[in-house]
Length: 112
Length: 112
Image (cartoon, rainbow over all chains, first blue to last red; front, side, top):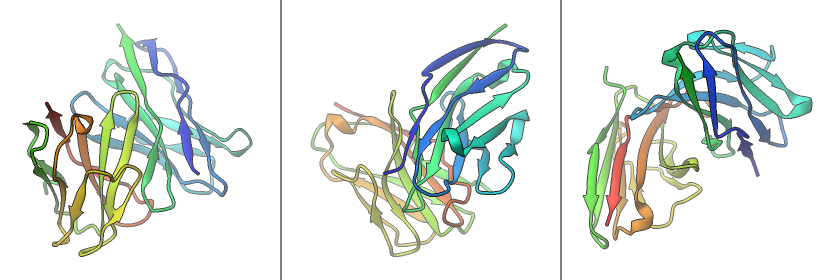
């Protein structure tokens, strides 16, 4: 069965520092991978997705993610974090029913 | 263009009461989903629909029923609410398998 692991429950970074959020997935075939962001009290918004092709994908708000099949990973990165990036981030893999299977999320706090 | 809307935003029920959550989308999407979000659990799929008149069970369907009588609406029902159903419920829609899912703002339900 497909599954997603986000090893870090909570990460704190300083504003202007770089960010990497980890995501590992379990899936037999080539996965469809997604990163969503949820601001407090809001629904989820898609940051980026990977279906095939170039393993480095660019998303909105300056985020990017790299698909590494050998490591079953799809880590999210941003070179310089802004205070407005404080939110919860969810990695997801496409399930067999066309749904999304989410990781448990990583909460990002940004220090001034 | 409102996207995905959910009614109500908040609700408190007593154990054994029933209620219906309404999800509406104006993007002419075929696929609609109901998820629940619990602390530390990410989002889990309750039921989904791949078109008007069709519904299917997701990962955690017990205690819930759904209907998709109109393409734009997806209703989630709780026939006899239990405290274990205290959660935040999100509706989402998409134009197809593994396409971007657009989320509503959520409904916070408390069952006493």
